[in-house]
Length: 149
Length: 139
Image 1 (cartoon, rainbow over the protein chains, first blue to last red):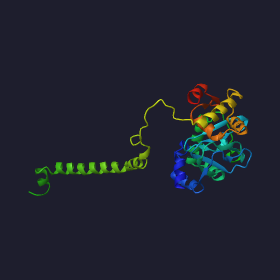
Image 2 (cartoon, rainbow over the protein chains, first blue to last red; image 1 turned 90 degrees about the vertical axis):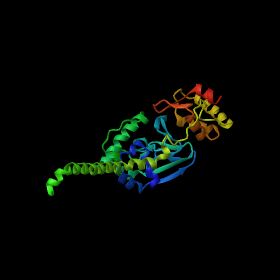
Image 3 (tube, rainbow over the protein chains, first blue to last red; image 1 turned 60 degrees about the vertical axis):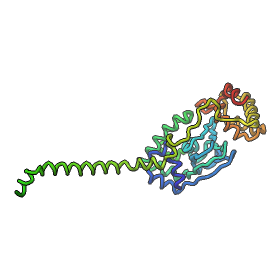
């Protein structure tokens, strides 16, 4: 769990999240090794997990042929990049052997829907990260995040 | 001579003020040092990430990504496939074509081309092939 939390802390998204919140989330985290060519999430399937990259290269294939390549430690693959209304909207494939942290989607959504400064700080950081890392992602404007993601 | 007279006569007030000042300054310094201790501990814990302790890689113009003969062959096949697509092509589509075409290790080859900046993002979700870089590194 400590290792997974340390990986989260390397991402700018989680830097303002309190240690206690990370530890609470850490209880449901697990690290996983994936092989080259392995598919982590398939578009159209029920969305059960979000991912944080520790090492390796992931290809996130969105609809209409668009895609994002993630290869930095701490890169977060979740929210509108990955799912909508509980369904995966993109397919995530490992281009190289990868080490990833798997976060249950439900527990993560519970965290960001908490009316807490940590959740607000995360969403603010995510919006900034999303707009400069994935400028091609459509803007979503809905307060009902559980429904949306 | 006793009491306040003795204190006045032997600079007692001045000595006590100096004493109080020394003790107070010492306590303030100590508390400030303790309050900053966590930064020192953070530095110690993350010492491997400090540039001071990192081994410097020799500055060189050599490309960081070295292609094996097999990777070069796969990369040439990737280039041919990319040329059948638009200038700004879909990376998943290119990968699918590479898999259908039976290119060796299509995922790893694509990762290498991305790492070498031969295939680069156009920031709009599509990618482009940098021919100059391809010719330098692969041809």
